[in-house]
Length: 87
Image 1 (tube, one colour):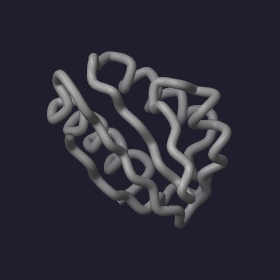
Image 2 (cartoon, rainbow, N blue to C red):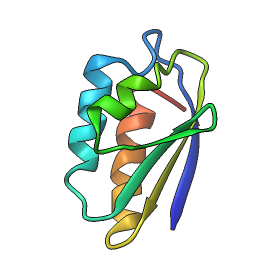
Image 3 (cartoon, rainbow, N blue to C red):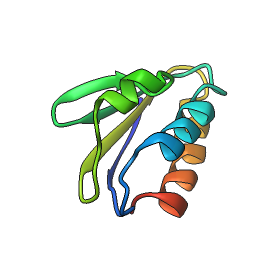
């Protein structure tokens, strides 16, 4: 299992465009990838799940990957998140 914590710095949080990009990226991997926010966990491959969290600026999120390719998945997701929406 691989896990990383982020603080969202994007003014718009994780809304439509970045949420869709995250879901598309996560969907490229076989690993189970989840997003946790406010004690709620959703499948990062589900746009409806990610959007339902309504993640705003300043929020702390946790991304977890388990299974085949988990480290590569988290590495690629980490690059996207830190360059686009969080630190």
